[in-house]
Image (cartoon, rainbow, N blue to C red):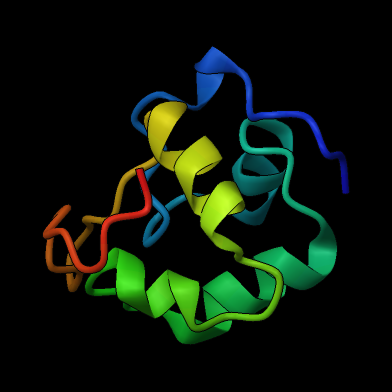
Length: 85
């Protein structure tokens, strides 16, 4: 995993529907984080993501600022939970 902020190409990446390849290449997530996200789907809010190991407040801010979102067929949209921004 890299400590750099995700690149702007992450804009519009839906954490509920993105492929593992997209989660890695667009968001810079490592395989452990990707597996956690995939197994936790459907994610309904950023609070769901915050409960996963390694998804610290700074990491969530990086993802949100890069345009990652929570939506998809069963997601709750980008309903805010705790503010991580």
